[in-house]
Image 1 (tube, rainbow, N blue to C red):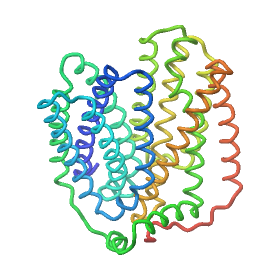
Image 2: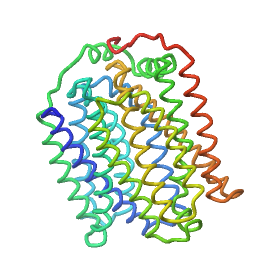
Image 3: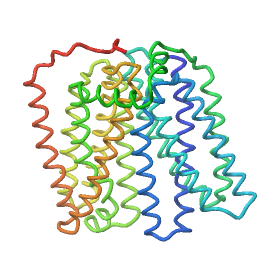
Image 4: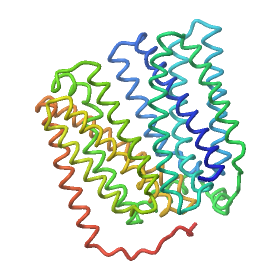
Length: 402
């Protein structure tokens, strides 16, 4: 991969590890200060911030040169961490500064994630995008896993102030690693600067609705969310009530999911030039449903572990072609708005599925809920694949449209 991508990769890895460390530390600290119901409301508020910000930040991302915006986002996160660290060390306040940090960091992570998605297209050639996205998928999983494990160990030994100070240092390093990346203004940036925010926002949603390829990506994303969301919401009670295990069982299942994702990301990077993006994308959607169905039908830990391992591979196989197809079929001047809109739609879909799966557990057993969601999702996935193969795709590529 190009030298600039390696700098970008290292910076992103450090930032992900740092954010994951503080994430687990902040939530653990808040859990000691809040009741379970208040903590649930806090998680819901973070979810809401992510949805609203994903819906609205697209035009700003497309207005500002992405490399400069990414550098600025990392720098602001460092300054924010430093400010909260100072408040915690100089005052008795704990909860309010941490809640403010959590809210602002969530907003900045949305901006940074969507901006980084756009930066990749500037520093990597189009034919190398599948490999780059495979490596970034590995980075996200390994960085998050390392950060969560380190955060769990650090919070047991150090204060929250010390941990936030460590994350601030990590963000300085991440910021310095971004300096070799050049900032290059484009015609799209110059054009969108003359329009209003709301017209830019409307243009992004209109383009998404009118582009059949993007709408197909979004529909497959909805189906995938439908099939796997119950697992995200109910994995802990599944480990306890169905597998008759404890915290170790839950941890093993989460670990299997991460290991599977890392393994598939590395495999995809190795064979990316031989794989058809659309076929892999469709196959991964079906495999998610198949493995979720298998997990719902098992009651033993070895089979559940195997199912989670395979599901992690399917999730990674889904995410890599999804990102690449989105980058390759969306004009650069609209990429921030289109990805933000998709993230917002996916977040809303997940919220609905979370609520529905939670309600259905009052009527059915947890494993039955898994089977219901995966079975119906598979039927819709097969129907979408059949529909796509029978419908002629005569649209010309619009990569150069701005």
